[in-house]
Length: 516
Image (cartoon, rainbow, N blue to C red; front, side, top):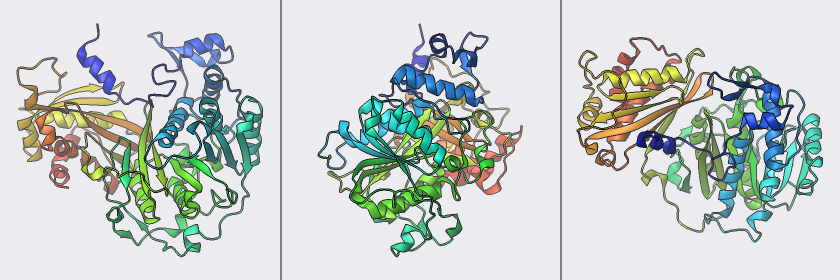
């Protein structure tokens, strides 16, 4: 019978959207291989007898997507070589989050039922995945836009091959005529951006417009990195058209070299799908600028965000253009994290709780600029080494990329005062005890997880385990966990070296980190 500790860990592990078909029943590769002979050659078995596929093989990931769409959604689907191949569970997450937005009472509900919602997919691609899933799962109608002939051709084929939903989906060509100037310039807006200092919760957060959230002006914005490509919304949305939402999986990267750095996956992708000058930040800013003109033509504007470091900047830009509501969420699929960003110009129906007063049981930050040879496990081992050397109890779960840490309140105070025990006097690394003679109120437990975004970019997340501990109310958790933010020095140095002496480097950063 599983132990309480094991059950607790499983329940606290990040999950996909609860209404996602795959939340409780992930794809069964063995079953799919037995039902679909075309998928069978791509499935192999580990020594433990577990079915796997090679995620670096584009043909394998494409065939998996094809059989999942057919088996679970009744959708006939295909894309040619080189086109972006989506993962079905992750795309379902985005669809269900938009469904949450539409049924919420944050803004006044539309006159039509959520089942009759109309969406706009920016850059639908050859895969046309969002319109196909949205129409199949929820009966939504869509306009899917794109610029390349091959994307338009195959998106139309994928729609036509599914007559049960084809009347719900329109594929619209975008004329490839770059903007000569930004929408902001055309409307007299200053070409400066603002850096937000608002702390974001890792869970879905709602914010109310507050001029204080737009922080100091960034006078050194790089105008050359602003989006200068084909139209996004303005010039594509027709006069008088109304939509309940738009959605977008933006080009995350600035170069194809950057896009191809992850050797562990192969999702394909053309330059038009993967890159644009300025990367996802520039592209999403163009959506924001277009939305500031279109206003309530859309009830909700949304976009996927690949790098958490861009969220604060984008949110501050949203307040700058006068939105009334901003919402964020996190999409977790396997070891990959993405974020959802949504905003509206529709007046809110009720007062929202400011994120600044919300209790923060989860703290996270990004590490960028790491040498390519260092991965999530190196960071976890360094974190484990630091807290063990400081006298804490640690249990590293390498397969789940997380480490559980237990610290006494006295040790918490010592760490905050930079008085951690020397290595020869510290408690050595060990498994966390099942029971303890000390009261649970005398200790603090938290978990640190590390997710790889792309090579050289990691997300570090800390979550409080015993939320009822008085220490958490006193802010000890936030303070102690923030010592892990010594990793932020990577951003300044552009280098990091994980070696036997690395944990000692914490000492020179911990005092500064704890007093931020």
